[in-house]
Amino acid sequence: MTISFFLQNNLFYVHSEQYSKIYEVAEMRKMADSIALFLKDVALNANFSHYKRIVYSSGATSFTTARIIYSLLKGLRIAFPALTFLGISHFLTYLTIFNKKSPSGIIAIPTMRGDYFICEYNQSLLSSAKILSIDTLKRSTQIVFFIENSDFNNLNLAKLQFQLLNTPALTRNLNFINNDLKIDYGFTPEYRNQKTCGF
Image (cartoon, one colour):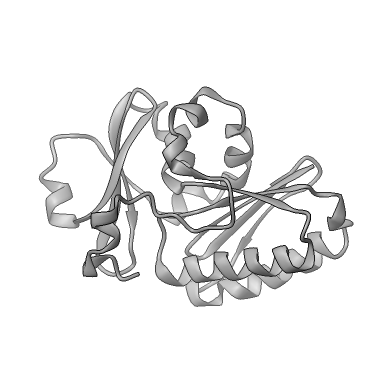
């Protein structure tokens, strides 16, 4: 069985064949509290050993959220060494939403440092990710979809990740998935080395 989870700022989404829930906390830095609730609700009470694979959100996201994701993954790997991990980019998950609204555009995820992780897409194909300021995005001639948590309060993003498995969108964007325990921001090496990334 597979369990999928998606973390983005102050929301933590969980989905599996038998379980689906959204945890919400008041502040992003309290995200770890929702991780504890997840472990209590699912991992400890639902015989977590039955799960074979973890599908998780691998970024792009804020540095604090990325550290929390990685800590959770490391803990699960230690506790359940037989688990395999599949990381799916936030951009790929959000693409399933915005591609229905427009066949091409820009997905913009806040870095929480005043600018945005952005990724262009066209006909379900994502391009390389980078960081841009809000002023640059406002001057764009393309449609820009800004990610705000309030837009997804009634939508389980982990479920969308789960539904991406074995779909054409996933196979067309293999550079936006990881077959291991790794937080990948989807950046080319030059972006990973930029000081503005903050990683």
